Image (tube, rainbow, N blue to C red; front, side):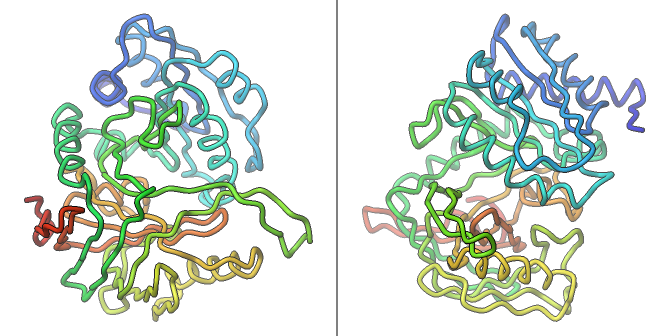
Length: 365
Protein backbone atom coordinates (compact mmCIF):
# COMPACT_ATOMS: atom_id res chain seq x y z
CA UNK A 1 0.00 0.00 0.00
CA UNK A 2 1.39 3.39 -0.99
CA UNK A 3 1.70 5.92 1.83
CA UNK A 4 3.42 9.27 2.34
CA UNK A 5 4.16 10.92 5.69
CA UNK A 6 2.45 14.26 6.20
CA UNK A 7 5.81 16.00 5.77
CA UNK A 8 6.61 14.17 2.51
CA UNK A 9 3.07 14.69 1.24
CA UNK A 10 3.37 18.46 1.66
CA UNK A 11 6.85 18.38 0.11
CA UNK A 12 5.53 16.64 -3.02
CA UNK A 13 2.44 18.87 -3.22
CA UNK A 14 4.65 21.96 -3.22
CA UNK A 15 6.85 20.68 -6.02
CA UNK A 16 3.92 19.55 -8.18
CA UNK A 17 2.39 23.01 -7.78
CA UNK A 18 5.71 24.51 -8.96
CA UNK A 19 5.65 22.20 -11.96
CA UNK A 20 2.11 23.25 -12.88
CA UNK A 21 3.03 26.95 -12.63
CA UNK A 22 6.45 27.04 -14.27
CA UNK A 23 6.44 24.10 -16.71
CA UNK A 24 2.80 23.76 -17.72
CA UNK A 25 2.19 27.47 -17.10
CA UNK A 26 -1.45 27.01 -16.22
CA UNK A 27 -3.62 29.69 -14.67
CA UNK A 28 -6.41 29.75 -12.06
CA UNK A 29 -9.73 28.35 -13.34
CA UNK A 30 -8.03 26.26 -16.07
CA UNK A 31 -9.42 22.73 -16.33
CA UNK A 32 -7.17 19.81 -15.38
CA UNK A 33 -7.35 16.01 -15.31
CA UNK A 34 -5.22 13.59 -13.29
CA UNK A 35 -5.06 9.98 -14.48
CA UNK A 36 -4.10 7.44 -11.83
CA UNK A 37 -2.58 4.08 -12.78
CA UNK A 38 -1.60 2.35 -9.50
CA UNK A 39 -0.31 5.63 -8.02
CA UNK A 40 -2.87 6.62 -5.35
CA UNK A 41 -0.58 8.57 -3.01
CA UNK A 42 0.93 10.72 -5.76
CA UNK A 43 -2.53 11.19 -7.27
CA UNK A 44 -3.78 12.64 -3.97
CA UNK A 45 -0.73 14.95 -3.86
CA UNK A 46 -1.33 16.02 -7.46
CA UNK A 47 -5.00 16.74 -6.70
CA UNK A 48 -4.04 18.99 -3.80
CA UNK A 49 -1.34 20.70 -5.91
CA UNK A 50 -3.82 21.40 -8.71
CA UNK A 51 -6.36 22.71 -6.19
CA UNK A 52 -3.70 24.96 -4.64
CA UNK A 53 -3.17 26.42 -8.13
CA UNK A 54 -6.98 26.98 -8.22
CA UNK A 55 -7.49 24.68 -11.19
CA UNK A 56 -10.77 22.91 -11.92
CA UNK A 57 -9.49 19.38 -11.45
CA UNK A 58 -10.95 15.95 -12.28
CA UNK A 59 -9.55 12.53 -11.37
CA UNK A 60 -9.79 9.37 -13.47
CA UNK A 61 -8.58 5.95 -12.25
CA UNK A 62 -7.31 3.19 -14.56
CA UNK A 63 -8.07 0.14 -12.43
CA UNK A 64 -7.63 -2.91 -14.68
CA UNK A 65 -5.74 -5.73 -12.95
CA UNK A 66 -3.83 -6.56 -16.11
CA UNK A 67 -1.97 -4.50 -18.72
CA UNK A 68 -4.06 -2.44 -21.13
CA UNK A 69 -3.64 -3.01 -24.86
CA UNK A 70 -5.68 0.16 -25.38
CA UNK A 71 -6.78 2.60 -22.70
CA UNK A 72 -10.51 2.90 -21.93
CA UNK A 73 -12.71 4.90 -24.24
CA UNK A 74 -13.84 6.91 -21.21
CA UNK A 75 -10.34 8.43 -20.96
CA UNK A 76 -9.98 9.01 -24.69
CA UNK A 77 -13.43 10.58 -24.92
CA UNK A 78 -12.69 12.88 -21.97
CA UNK A 79 -9.51 14.12 -23.65
CA UNK A 80 -10.89 14.38 -27.19
CA UNK A 81 -14.35 15.78 -26.54
CA UNK A 82 -14.01 17.67 -23.23
CA UNK A 83 -10.36 18.58 -23.58
CA UNK A 84 -8.90 19.94 -20.32
CA UNK A 85 -6.34 22.74 -20.52
CA UNK A 86 -3.78 20.49 -18.81
CA UNK A 87 -3.34 17.06 -17.35
CA UNK A 88 -1.09 14.51 -15.73
CA UNK A 89 -0.83 10.72 -16.17
CA UNK A 90 0.73 8.93 -13.18
CA UNK A 91 1.65 5.35 -14.14
CA UNK A 92 3.34 3.46 -11.27
CA UNK A 93 4.48 -0.04 -12.24
CA UNK A 94 6.44 -0.78 -9.05
CA UNK A 95 4.27 -3.78 -8.14
CA UNK A 96 4.10 -5.05 -11.72
CA UNK A 97 7.38 -4.10 -13.49
CA UNK A 98 6.53 -6.10 -16.61
CA UNK A 99 3.37 -4.03 -17.14
CA UNK A 100 5.46 -1.01 -18.13
CA UNK A 101 6.61 -2.61 -21.36
CA UNK A 102 3.29 -4.36 -21.92
CA UNK A 103 1.41 -1.03 -21.77
CA UNK A 104 3.95 0.82 -23.89
CA UNK A 105 1.84 0.45 -27.03
CA UNK A 106 -1.24 1.83 -25.24
CA UNK A 107 0.76 4.78 -23.94
CA UNK A 108 2.17 5.52 -27.40
CA UNK A 109 -1.38 5.51 -28.79
CA UNK A 110 -2.53 7.81 -26.00
CA UNK A 111 0.23 10.32 -26.67
CA UNK A 112 0.36 10.36 -30.45
CA UNK A 113 -3.25 9.60 -31.37
CA UNK A 114 -4.94 11.67 -28.67
CA UNK A 115 -2.70 14.07 -26.70
CA UNK A 116 -1.03 15.53 -29.80
CA UNK A 117 -4.40 16.03 -31.48
CA UNK A 118 -6.02 18.22 -28.81
CA UNK A 119 -4.83 21.53 -27.27
CA UNK A 120 -3.62 20.15 -23.94
CA UNK A 121 -0.47 20.39 -21.80
CA UNK A 122 0.17 16.81 -20.69
CA UNK A 123 2.60 15.58 -18.02
CA UNK A 124 3.48 11.97 -18.80
CA UNK A 125 4.85 9.81 -15.94
CA UNK A 126 5.40 6.20 -17.01
CA UNK A 127 7.18 4.31 -14.17
CA UNK A 128 6.83 7.12 -11.61
CA UNK A 129 7.62 6.06 -8.01
CA UNK A 130 7.18 7.58 -4.55
CA UNK A 131 10.94 7.61 -4.04
CA UNK A 132 11.39 9.57 -7.25
CA UNK A 133 8.86 12.10 -6.00
CA UNK A 134 10.17 12.47 -2.45
CA UNK A 135 13.93 11.99 -2.83
CA UNK A 136 14.70 12.33 -6.53
CA UNK A 137 14.12 14.41 -9.65
CA UNK A 138 10.62 15.62 -8.76
CA UNK A 139 12.34 17.78 -6.12
CA UNK A 140 14.19 19.91 -8.71
CA UNK A 141 13.88 23.68 -9.03
CA UNK A 142 11.32 24.03 -11.85
CA UNK A 143 11.68 27.74 -12.56
CA UNK A 144 15.49 27.54 -12.96
CA UNK A 145 15.28 24.32 -14.96
CA UNK A 146 12.74 25.79 -17.38
CA UNK A 147 14.99 28.82 -17.90
CA UNK A 148 18.07 26.66 -18.51
CA UNK A 149 16.21 24.39 -20.93
CA UNK A 150 15.07 27.43 -22.89
CA UNK A 151 18.68 28.62 -23.18
CA UNK A 152 19.78 25.14 -24.24
CA UNK A 153 17.14 25.08 -26.97
CA UNK A 154 18.48 28.39 -28.25
CA UNK A 155 21.97 26.85 -28.45
CA UNK A 156 20.55 23.94 -30.42
CA UNK A 157 18.67 26.06 -32.95
CA UNK A 158 19.80 25.43 -36.54
CA UNK A 159 22.10 22.55 -35.50
CA UNK A 160 22.72 20.22 -38.42
CA UNK A 161 25.32 17.84 -36.96
CA UNK A 162 26.49 16.66 -33.55
CA UNK A 163 29.79 14.97 -32.75
CA UNK A 164 29.61 13.22 -29.38
CA UNK A 165 32.52 11.60 -27.54
CA UNK A 166 32.74 10.28 -23.98
CA UNK A 167 35.23 8.65 -21.58
CA UNK A 168 33.46 5.32 -22.22
CA UNK A 169 34.93 5.35 -25.73
CA UNK A 170 31.75 6.51 -27.43
CA UNK A 171 32.48 8.39 -30.64
CA UNK A 172 29.64 9.14 -33.00
CA UNK A 173 28.56 11.72 -35.57
CA UNK A 174 24.87 12.46 -35.96
CA UNK A 175 23.13 14.40 -38.72
CA UNK A 176 19.82 15.89 -37.58
CA UNK A 177 17.27 15.79 -40.44
CA UNK A 178 15.63 19.12 -41.17
CA UNK A 179 12.23 17.78 -40.15
CA UNK A 180 13.46 16.76 -36.67
CA UNK A 181 13.51 19.52 -34.04
CA UNK A 182 14.82 19.85 -30.49
CA UNK A 183 12.31 20.20 -27.68
CA UNK A 184 12.12 19.95 -23.88
CA UNK A 185 9.89 18.56 -21.16
CA UNK A 186 10.81 21.51 -18.92
CA UNK A 187 8.30 23.71 -20.80
CA UNK A 188 5.07 21.90 -21.67
CA UNK A 189 3.05 24.58 -23.41
CA UNK A 190 1.11 23.63 -26.55
CA UNK A 191 1.33 23.51 -29.49
CA UNK A 192 4.35 21.26 -29.86
CA UNK A 193 7.38 22.00 -32.03
CA UNK A 194 5.81 20.17 -35.00
CA UNK A 195 2.63 22.23 -34.95
CA UNK A 196 0.45 19.58 -33.31
CA UNK A 197 -2.27 21.02 -31.11
CA UNK A 198 -1.17 19.31 -27.93
CA UNK A 199 2.18 18.95 -26.21
CA UNK A 200 3.39 16.30 -23.77
CA UNK A 201 6.54 15.95 -21.73
CA UNK A 202 7.80 13.67 -19.01
CA UNK A 203 7.30 14.29 -15.33
CA UNK A 204 9.85 14.29 -13.71
CA UNK A 205 11.21 16.83 -16.17
CA UNK A 206 14.81 17.44 -17.10
CA UNK A 207 15.99 16.96 -20.67
CA UNK A 208 16.20 18.46 -24.12
CA UNK A 209 15.97 16.06 -27.03
CA UNK A 210 15.46 15.63 -30.75
CA UNK A 211 13.06 12.92 -31.91
CA UNK A 212 10.18 12.52 -34.33
CA UNK A 213 7.95 9.64 -35.28
CA UNK A 214 5.32 8.90 -37.88
CA UNK A 215 2.52 6.39 -38.34
CA UNK A 216 3.06 3.88 -41.14
CA UNK A 217 1.28 0.82 -42.47
CA UNK A 218 3.34 -2.32 -41.94
CA UNK A 219 2.73 -6.05 -42.03
CA UNK A 220 2.73 -7.92 -38.75
CA UNK A 221 4.46 -11.17 -39.70
CA UNK A 222 3.05 -12.97 -36.68
CA UNK A 223 -0.56 -12.35 -37.70
CA UNK A 224 -0.10 -11.75 -41.43
CA UNK A 225 -2.19 -8.57 -41.13
CA UNK A 226 -1.33 -5.03 -42.13
CA UNK A 227 -1.40 -2.66 -39.18
CA UNK A 228 -0.77 1.04 -38.59
CA UNK A 229 2.09 1.57 -36.17
CA UNK A 230 4.35 4.34 -34.91
CA UNK A 231 7.88 4.25 -36.38
CA UNK A 232 10.74 6.73 -35.80
CA UNK A 233 12.24 9.17 -38.26
CA UNK A 234 15.86 8.08 -38.51
CA UNK A 235 18.65 10.30 -37.22
CA UNK A 236 21.61 9.65 -39.53
CA UNK A 237 24.36 8.40 -37.23
CA UNK A 238 27.75 6.87 -37.94
CA UNK A 239 30.08 5.57 -35.30
CA UNK A 240 30.06 3.73 -32.01
CA UNK A 241 27.98 4.33 -28.90
CA UNK A 242 29.42 2.77 -25.74
CA UNK A 243 26.84 2.95 -22.97
CA UNK A 244 28.32 3.08 -19.44
CA UNK A 245 25.38 4.23 -17.28
CA UNK A 246 22.14 2.39 -18.03
CA UNK A 247 19.80 1.25 -20.81
CA UNK A 248 16.02 1.37 -21.05
CA UNK A 249 14.37 -2.00 -20.47
CA UNK A 250 17.00 -3.15 -17.97
CA UNK A 251 16.66 -2.17 -14.31
CA UNK A 252 20.17 -1.59 -13.04
CA UNK A 253 23.42 0.22 -13.63
CA UNK A 254 25.71 -1.07 -16.37
CA UNK A 255 28.60 -3.21 -15.12
CA UNK A 256 31.74 -1.10 -15.78
CA UNK A 257 33.49 -4.29 -16.91
CA UNK A 258 30.69 -5.17 -19.34
CA UNK A 259 29.74 -2.03 -21.23
CA UNK A 260 27.17 -1.96 -24.04
CA UNK A 261 28.47 -1.27 -27.53
CA UNK A 262 26.19 -0.38 -30.44
CA UNK A 263 27.49 0.46 -33.90
CA UNK A 264 25.55 2.69 -36.28
CA UNK A 265 25.85 3.08 -40.02
CA UNK A 266 23.70 5.69 -41.78
CA UNK A 267 21.43 5.74 -38.74
CA UNK A 268 20.81 2.00 -38.62
CA UNK A 269 21.98 -0.04 -35.62
CA UNK A 270 24.19 -2.70 -37.24
CA UNK A 271 25.91 -4.42 -34.31
CA UNK A 272 25.21 -4.89 -30.61
CA UNK A 273 27.63 -6.25 -28.05
CA UNK A 274 27.37 -6.80 -24.30
CA UNK A 275 28.74 -9.62 -22.14
CA UNK A 276 26.12 -9.09 -19.45
CA UNK A 277 22.98 -11.19 -20.10
CA UNK A 278 20.73 -8.64 -18.35
CA UNK A 279 21.26 -5.67 -20.68
CA UNK A 280 21.70 -8.05 -23.62
CA UNK A 281 18.07 -9.13 -23.20
CA UNK A 282 17.06 -5.63 -24.37
CA UNK A 283 18.70 -6.32 -27.73
CA UNK A 284 16.94 -9.68 -27.97
CA UNK A 285 13.63 -7.85 -27.56
CA UNK A 286 14.70 -5.38 -30.23
CA UNK A 287 15.70 -8.11 -32.66
CA UNK A 288 12.35 -9.84 -32.10
CA UNK A 289 10.65 -6.57 -33.12
CA UNK A 290 12.80 -6.39 -36.26
CA UNK A 291 11.77 -9.92 -37.23
CA UNK A 292 8.09 -9.31 -36.49
CA UNK A 293 7.76 -6.15 -38.60
CA UNK A 294 10.70 -6.46 -41.01
CA UNK A 295 12.02 -2.98 -40.27
CA UNK A 296 15.52 -2.04 -39.04
CA UNK A 297 16.19 -0.60 -35.61
CA UNK A 298 17.38 2.98 -36.05
CA UNK A 299 18.67 5.90 -34.03
CA UNK A 300 15.44 7.50 -32.87
CA UNK A 301 16.55 10.14 -30.37
CA UNK A 302 19.44 12.15 -29.01
CA UNK A 303 18.93 13.77 -25.60
CA UNK A 304 20.78 15.70 -22.92
CA UNK A 305 20.01 15.44 -19.19
CA UNK A 306 19.63 18.62 -17.10
CA UNK A 307 18.04 17.65 -13.76
CA UNK A 308 20.41 18.05 -10.82
CA UNK A 309 18.20 15.91 -8.56
CA UNK A 310 18.09 12.88 -10.88
CA UNK A 311 19.95 9.69 -9.88
CA UNK A 312 20.80 6.38 -11.50
CA UNK A 313 18.03 4.06 -10.32
CA UNK A 314 17.52 1.68 -13.23
CA UNK A 315 14.28 3.53 -14.04
CA UNK A 316 14.74 5.38 -17.33
CA UNK A 317 12.06 7.95 -16.50
CA UNK A 318 14.55 9.29 -13.96
CA UNK A 319 17.90 8.14 -15.35
CA UNK A 320 17.66 9.95 -18.69
CA UNK A 321 17.23 13.27 -16.85
CA UNK A 322 20.57 12.84 -15.03
CA UNK A 323 22.58 16.02 -15.32
CA UNK A 324 25.90 15.58 -17.11
CA UNK A 325 24.73 12.70 -19.30
CA UNK A 326 23.69 12.27 -22.91
CA UNK A 327 21.53 9.50 -24.30
CA UNK A 328 20.79 7.98 -27.66
CA UNK A 329 17.69 5.87 -28.17
CA UNK A 330 17.22 2.83 -30.36
CA UNK A 331 13.80 2.81 -31.98
CA UNK A 332 11.50 0.45 -33.87
CA UNK A 333 7.81 -0.46 -33.98
CA UNK A 334 6.51 -0.26 -30.37
CA UNK A 335 10.13 -0.20 -29.20
CA UNK A 336 12.27 2.52 -27.63
CA UNK A 337 15.43 2.01 -25.55
CA UNK A 338 17.52 4.91 -24.25
CA UNK A 339 21.26 4.34 -23.70
CA UNK A 340 23.07 6.78 -21.40
CA UNK A 341 26.72 7.81 -21.36
CA UNK A 342 28.41 9.82 -18.63
CA UNK A 343 30.42 13.04 -19.03
CA UNK A 344 30.00 13.47 -22.80
CA UNK A 345 31.58 16.18 -24.90
CA UNK A 346 29.22 17.48 -27.57
CA UNK A 347 30.32 19.52 -30.56
CA UNK A 348 27.60 21.15 -32.67
CA UNK A 349 27.82 22.22 -36.30
CA UNK A 350 25.25 24.79 -37.39
CA UNK A 351 23.61 25.58 -40.72
CA UNK A 352 25.95 28.58 -40.96
CA UNK A 353 28.95 26.23 -40.98
CA UNK A 354 30.11 27.31 -37.52
CA UNK A 355 31.19 24.52 -35.15
CA UNK A 356 31.40 24.90 -31.37
CA UNK A 357 31.28 22.83 -28.20
CA UNK A 358 28.05 23.06 -26.24
CA UNK A 359 29.03 20.53 -23.56
CA UNK A 360 32.47 19.56 -22.22
CA UNK A 361 32.90 16.46 -20.05
CA UNK A 362 29.24 16.62 -19.04
CA UNK A 363 29.22 20.35 -18.22
CA UNK A 364 27.08 22.75 -20.25
CA UNK A 365 29.06 25.56 -21.88
